View 1 (cartoon, rainbow, N blue to C red):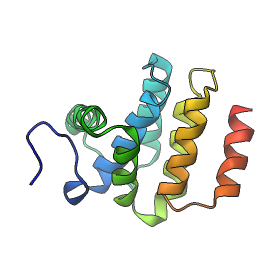
View 2 (view 1 turned 90 degrees about the horizontal axis):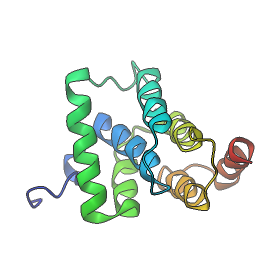
View 3 (view 1 turned 90 degrees about the vertical axis):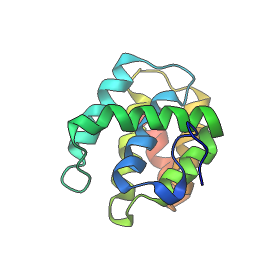
Length: 139
C-alpha cells in the first residue's frame, strides 16, 4: 500500500495519469519549470484526445500527484512507472509530446536529452529512431 503523499504508484496509475505524469516529468526534466513548457504540455494533452481524455477538473489533481511522485521517488522511477501504464498504441505519440514539451523553452539541456532517452527506453521504443527524433528536434 502506498504511503500517503507519495504520489503515483504503478499499481494505481491509469493511462490518463501516466500520460500526465510523463508530460509533467518533461516539464521538470531540465530542473526548471518554464511557462512555455507548461503550455506545450497542455496543448499535447489535448492533442492526444480521444485516445487519452482527461477531464479538465482532473488535470490539476493529476499534475499535483505527478509532482509528488517525482519529489518522493525521483524522475527516473517516476518515468518508468508512468511508461508502464501508457497503452502501446499511443506510446510513440506520448514520446513525441514529451519531446515537444522538453523543446518548448528553446534550450536543449543535456539533462533533457538524457530524460528523453529514458522515456524512449521506458516506452520500449526503438533507441535509434528515438535518438534521431531527439537530434532532429533539439539539434
